[in-house]
Length: 233
Ligand SMILES: C[S@@+](CC[C@H](N)C(=O)[O-])C[C@H]1O[C@@H](n2cnc3c(N)ncnc32)[C@H](O)[C@@H]1O
Image: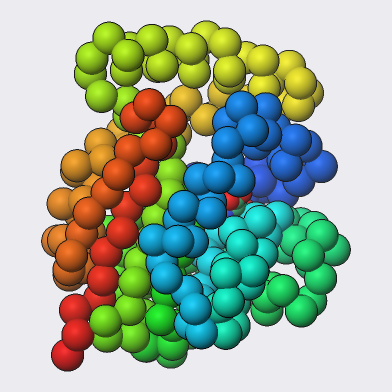
């Protein structure tokens, strides 16, 4: 990681720390109330019954809670923003997950620690995406499942162009106004610039060594849910 990557990561970390009080409300507004449904689809894709799960970039903990409800044996909710974790612990309690501060690019877990590694709305924030995928695969057990949900570039058709315009011109400014933090919500469309398309992301996962890589689009194509496996030995 270069010095400028490191600086960008620290900026992102501080921004998420600041956003905690408005974060859940803004999620609901910006996803038109659909973010909970998308997380549940991610959990279904991960088949977490009796699994040890890592929720990477856990934020305020909603994905961790869904994993617990779906019958995961144990959940580790990891995030590099301490303020997010404090909120997650208060919101969902210490019994929902082991909440711990950790950087996705340098995870404090031994190889092959989890059956499932999942993330929701985190990939766009990683300053080294191939490095992030390598870490996720390292801590997965052979045959384990990787599931990643995030905003993506809509397809380049009429519906996609309308979605893009609505996102940039309506949703983002409205969220900036409502949250009182315009810079943070300007970051949202900016975080897509230079971010791979859904297909490119699938290719990156394959290049990192993942098997059975697939993805589906949600929200008319504005959100992608990627799934993959660590090859069995
Ligand atoms: C958009 S929020 C998503 C939170 C949660 N997963 C959800 O579904 O609402 C992104 C989260 O990822 C965390 N994050 C970003 N980069 C990270 C990194 N390198 N390591 C750990 N956490 C990171 C941020 O602190 C933030 O809490």
